[in-house]
Amino acid sequence: MNQLGKSDLYVSPVSFGCMSLGENATVYKDLLQKAADAGINYFDTADLYQKGLNELYVGEALKPIRKSVIIATKVGNQWRADGSGWDWNPRKEYILGSAEQSLKRLKTDYIDLYQLHGGTIEDPIDATIEAFEQLKQEGKIRWYGISSIRPNVVREYVRRSNIVSVMMQYSLLDHRPEEALLDLLREHEISVICRGAIAQGLLAGKPADSYLQYTEGEVLRAAKAVAKVATETGRTALDVAMGYVWAHPAVATAALGIRTSAQLDGAIDVLRKAESLPESQLRFLRASVRPFRYEAHR
View (spheres, rainbow, N blue to C red):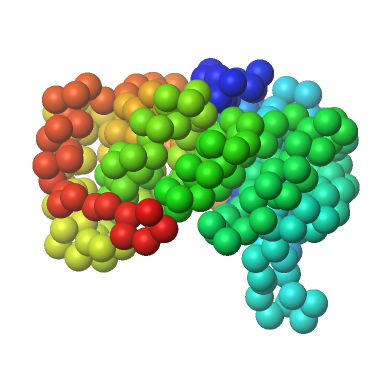
């Protein structure tokens, strides 16, 4: 287990990304219970997913074991009344009201980690922080963080708030956080919750395709490098892709989107090994991709 920032939360190196859970109660309850039994204790959802239904499913499934798991959810994306989409809303009043609704759907009286689901530099950041601090003082949340890939936003929350975590996309094929964010967060004892560690499966056996700035051929080259390390070390491609992000000490956990028993089995298998990569293998993998830096929101 890894400590999440300066909090008293200790999270498993592999966490359960709940966004892809289906609506079959028998299936998702079995998946979540099996994950918990195997040692995965961190479950990540958001009020945005399935217009709140995802929180409801997670809450129902985890209620019997609530005290032994960590539930994280997110706020800030407000569904339009007609259901046609959502708009960004970081206002204090909206966050406070949304927390109450999330608590009801999750069938709990506290949220372990409440995260701002995005953020812009134009937001009323101080008021947003006030909302999270108030919820913490009221005992409705234990800790708070943000989910963002914008360096300018992350820096403001590092400077002005008491966040314990930042969820961000990070992988061999999206190593932008290595430029500035990972070391900054480590320096301030703020943990990274990694998403996208396997790049939509492209680093773990899925047929090559273009991804972000990389062409199909470039993705194939990276995937072959991952496969080479896996073969040479007797591990799977999933082990290597996850080991890449675990290698940075700022990363406390990496969330895998899980919707099937086979995906859960893979997640459990990699959790049992939970090994970061040595520097020699990291160098080899990094040499397989061209540099990638944040262009906007710097």
